[in-house]
Length: 148
Image (tube, rainbow, N blue to C red; front, side, top):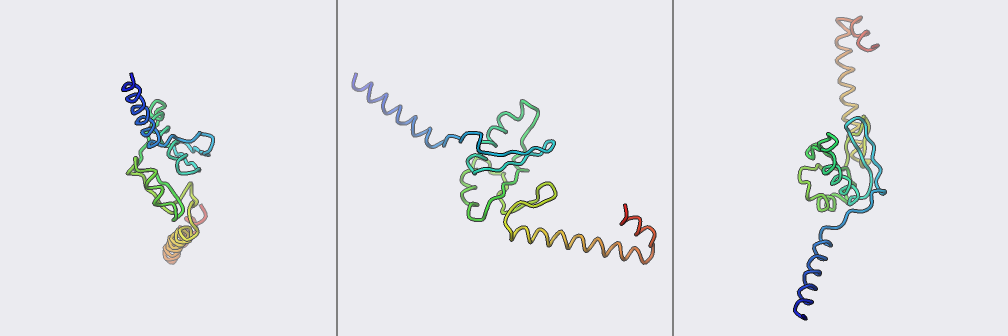
């Protein structure tokens, strides 16, 4: 009888350790998601975002939504990159970055935003140069291209 209690205690202790290692997901109310057609974005703490992603991967196919993890981008502050890699280790294809575009805008650090804006300005300046060059030979067409 004593041995059975000890065995049950060891089994219960082992099960408790397994549960602690899996880190239960936090409640849903702590994240804020936004959907635009089939594109989703979400803000929250890292463990909460992992819980959201787990639910999306699990429940999405039943609704016809298949999550392509290799297309997902997680933008975090530089000091949280390593922690994010640890928390999202079960999703090795997830891109963890310090900044990225989001619906025509930018999400991330100021330094990353500055770099992103500089690239956009350079692209825009190149387009203006090409239109200016075309305007020398075809002014009407260049005007039409700029006004539509």
